[in-house]
Amino acid sequence: MDTILSRLRVWPLWQKAKRFAVSAVHEDSATGARAEEFCQTLAKCLGRTSEISKEMWLLTELRTSQLRAIAAREAAAADLVIVSLHHAETLPNEVKSWIDLWLKQKRSRPAVLLALFDPLYLGTSSSIQVYLREVARRGNMEFLARSEEKPED
Image (cartoon, rainbow, N blue to C red; front, side):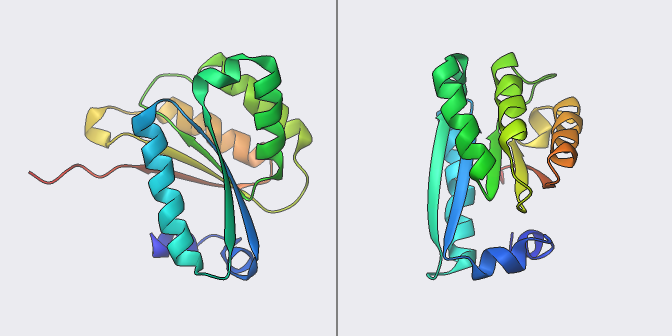
């Protein structure tokens, strides 16, 4: 993962940051654990000089407009926005609404949108990746998509 992160244009800024904000949306406990694991690895890469603040939102919480608005404000201010899902053809409507809200609030500061998916052998989410890549473009963000590795036999 060090190689992936070091290729990001924002990586030098992240390494110098004292505070680092992450906002994540996940589908269930498995996808939440995946986002949490990424954050732990990121913390190790950043070292002890950065304090990471992390907000994790369960996808079903975004169905409530008040919670969706809070989650959108947090994502708009985040250095890293994570969407951790199982493979599907499209994003749920509440996620799209959340994305629209935070893109409207996002300032011009550098950020990264990260999509985390199941292992490729379980399916593909190419249409979601295309959508999220466009979201990142609209928000002037870097985009990364990762699938878990196939477990060893």
